[in-house]
Image (cartoon, rainbow, N blue to C red; front, side):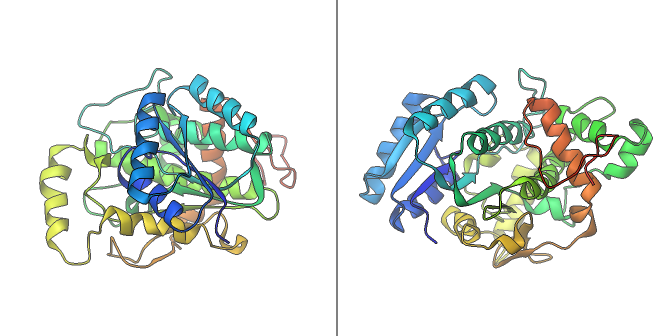
Length: 328
């Protein structure tokens, strides 16, 4: 099913821009594109229209780090009143050498998920996702493990050591990069993308029948602005090496194609994380089977931590809550 209305975050450059362009080229009737300022996103919409010769782009101001901006965007979407068929949560950030926190005290590479959670829950509450809507959120290869220079946190061990076994508190500490969290840029990025994979699994359990959500790694695509803040080791060592190895990098358009491919997946794989095959950064995507990705306790802990930070929840009517507050 080709979407008639799509909403794409992070469209001012890179993968989001490429995805928006391809959606229009493939017949999407309306592509809502977002940017941090209205002037910026209007320029993006005009640029996309000129590139595609399609007058289907609607600009929407959206600053994911600002809850008030997300609420304003939701208000605008309510005024439009047309349900979104394809929600592409693409905006993201590779963290830099120095730790950066948002005004809400969230580590910069973790922050897009908080805004995406607020946006997604808001759309669901307002009945602004179509009955068969597909939600795709940008993951990344380090979440699956085995990627040089990137290591994710062993959540059960971290929770046991620093948070009396409370995984929700442990995930919140990772989101805020403290307490008891040492800032290492590449590891913070791996943690952010692993939390996204857990979050989407928990989201899938809360969606109405017919809807589906997936985390999708676009794979290697170093020719984007996402790596503008990356540290020297990543920018000047890892990326140049990857660029020299055939099949380990790809164009933004090829990477963004993975998002559109996932938009046509069925509900039977809702909640799954799709990435490259082991040892690859490009090529076909496949469901990742690593046990840490499918740990339900970690998935629910990630959801509850995001709820704590964002203040926004979406309970599952079909998932009972135990007296301790943990969903079975």
